[in-house]
Length: 124
Image (cartoon, rainbow, N blue to C red; front, side, top):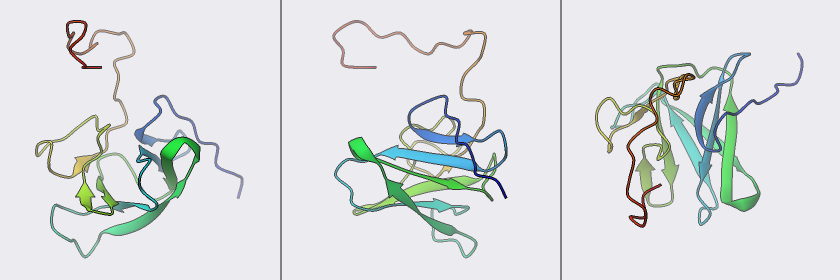
C-alpha cells in the first residue's frame, strides 16, 4: 500500500482526503496529548474510537484516520475534558455538542464569505 498524501485547504479542523479517510488537526499549544474521539455522542458511546493525535511544531496536533468519513461525529479530548472542534464547519446540535464532519466547508464561488465585523472588534 502506498503512502497517504495529506491535502489540506485550511490549517485546522477535520478534512476529508481525496483518497479517503479524514485528516484531523487542532491547535492546542498547552496540551501534551490530544485525542480525537470519533463516532461518539455527547455521552460515552460503545462505538467510539479514540485516536491519539501526533504533536507537531507550533502547538498543533494532527492525525489521519482511514476509516473516518463525512458525517461522522467527533470531538477532541484534552486534559480538562472533551470539546467540539473549534474549527468546525457544522454543529447540528449546537456549539457545545459533538461536531459533525462535513467535506465542503467553503463555497468555491465565494458566495458565502461569512459575517463582516467592524475593525477593532477582535473578531477574525
